[in-house]
Length: 206
Image 1 (cartoon, rainbow, N blue to C red):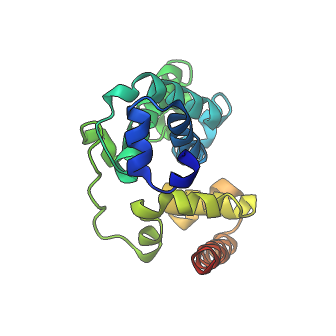
Image 2 (cartoon, rainbow, N blue to C red):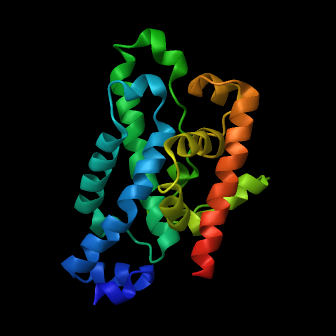
């Protein structure tokens, strides 16, 4: 049964590809929350007024279901890279759609530099060069586990981690986005990272 294989992505993918509807549904369900965080990290504040991150996730899920036969990977790493590629393309389409009606905001559009964009479907992503400790902490192999822990943190902790670690914004920009002083944001970020590390440590011990 799929429940027994919930952490074995290779088997889950294999059975889903073979036509097991339950495994296919579980494969997508496991990644919905993860895609939600990725979508939020890619959508600029000005665009959120018009497009909710959940819209990007829904569109991505629909397209991934439709094109599942095109996915050639076998691992969790390849599966997440494939989903991110679809989501990134959808987000770019949303930006282009609103560009004509929001020219004054065009300079604030997020530039999507997801390394998955240059990969073939199902191909693994190359490691990012010169990662800082905080970027290593959010490494690809731990993404689903980190997402689950991140979802349990207070909203301001989630926001500061997404802005700093996922969007990789300078602390000055993060402070402006959150309406706080730079020292306050730096302190908030340190607390958030420690809280996230503690949550993951407790999960490992459990």
